[in-house]
Image (cartoon, rainbow, N blue to C red):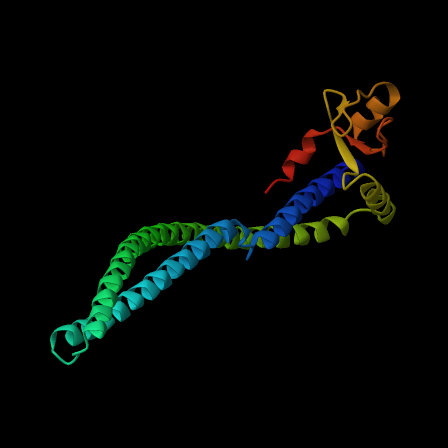
Length: 241
């Protein structure tokens, strides 16, 4: 195997590893991230708070209606049981009963409105609860999928690490150091394939002596444009999966 083929195949393994590492980082970031549920949870919490508020309003009004009814019962009994003899006091009781009935009627209307509001907010809460359940189910399905993908990515990375260790053991030390230096300087890509005499890293056409030497695949040839190592190309397809 030629020097450039060794380095090109190592480059393919490293590029695959880089892609997998980026995906692994994205998966790790997404795992446990419930940001997508935030708005649905906020809506459910708001609907629950509104339903509780409506229930409390109904409780207060209902309690007041009960209090007024109890007061009316007492006053009506006093009015008709003969226990009150004083005419002025009887007139006062009559006025109190009439006034209390008016107040109770108003509160009863408010209580009906409060009951309708409770029904509306309970319906809204039920809908929000269903939406939250669906969102959480979908989120959990997504998390399960991410965990499955993470296992696959980790497995592929282990295979690639093993393959890389075997590769670098067969590459001359000087060539490996050159490769690592260029890879570090060129955003992870030290070796570029040539397709139709064009460097696939910078898309510049290669010609003359560099082209002839690169096609032979025996000597180290730099792209005149991007300074990456050039490889004639096709042999890299052997390193897949």
